[in-house]
Amino acid sequence: MKEICVLGGSGFVGSAIVAKLDAAGYAVKVLTRRRDAAKHLFLLPNVQVVECNVQDYQALNSALRGVDAVINLIGVLHQSRQHSFNAMHHQLPAQLAKICVDLNIKRLLHMSSLRAGKNAPSQYLRSKGAGEAALLEYQHQLNITIFRPSIIFGRGDSFINLFASLVKNLPIVVLAKPNAKFQPVWVEDVASCFVSSIENTDTYGHTYELAGPSVYRFHELVKTVMATLQIKRLIIGLNDSFSYFQALVMEFLPVKLMSRDNIRSMEVDSVSDQPFPNAFNLVPTSLESIIPQYLVDQTPRGAYDRFRRFAAR
Ligand SMILES: NC(=O)c1ccc[n+]([C@@H]2O[C@H](COP(=O)([O-])OP(=O)(O)OC[C@H]3O[C@@H](n4cnc5c(N)ncnc54)[C@H](OP(=O)(O)O)[C@@H]3O)[C@@H](O)[C@H]2O)c1
Image (cartoon, rainbow, N blue to C red):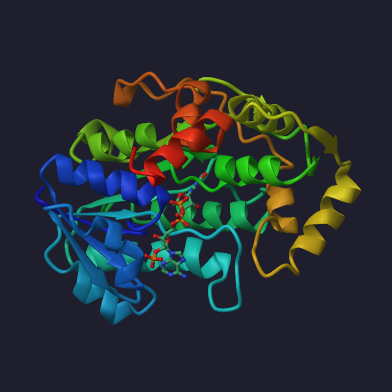
């Protein structure tokens, strides 16, 4: 395979995957709504960034013509009127699979989510489950691999960085669903799995759960962030009713931090009951070994380094 098309390649996980594909020598075509969103990829020598409205069947069909494999990473954590969970997580992968069949593109890798399924408690997880089911209808015509990660951490993530900034800026942390469980997995490990799977025929037709080496309750994750930043804050855990109430209030904020649907997703533990898949020959990386590398600028000592850099010393 020579040319790989990535939908959602400008995002947090997409950027890590695209960088690895580029380093492996693939020609990479990244589809984006706005070229500006992917400008950090312009300097990668084998990467071409193309504007495309992926919800337009004809536009997507033309953009995919001639590629050897497709990676779909498109996803939203908060739906809007124009971009519903159903449109993004269900209809889009179904349309993508149909186009792959029409264009005789045999390989499709798809990003879902741990605990996705039709009986899941949130619309996000149910729509991801519907997307998986739609793809499985094409399993006899396409070589499909589906990935289901827990939350993903790494430089530029929204989860750990969000809590780092809350911890730094607020005197107390009021936490919804403090006992919800997560098994965070490193973005570079996720990207390695995608890239090594492309031409590994053993992974065709499989669905893989990707989870890191440790399980954390939500409040433990926030404490880990605090320990990394060397900051102590009181954490007040909310019961279920107050968790939903807090999320309802947040739905009216201009910046989307948390929704009631996100709280519903936390009704099920984002934890895998399987070991990390053997197919990728990889020992998953721990959170503690990575987050200091990207939260360092926010520690008291890191601030001095920032000032030194600013003063060109
Ligand atoms: N991050 C996590 O912890 C996590 C955990 C489990 C599963 N996942 C899944 O992993 C995938 C990637 O997540 P991420 O964290 O990298 O997300 P991200 O940084 O928000 O990137 C999402 C990508 O989707 C594209 N996109 C978003 N809305 C779109 C729309 N309406 N139409 C077309 N494209 C749209 C964006 O492309 P443009 O802006 O360039 O058009 C962007 O590149 C998602 O499917 C997500 O559900 C993530």
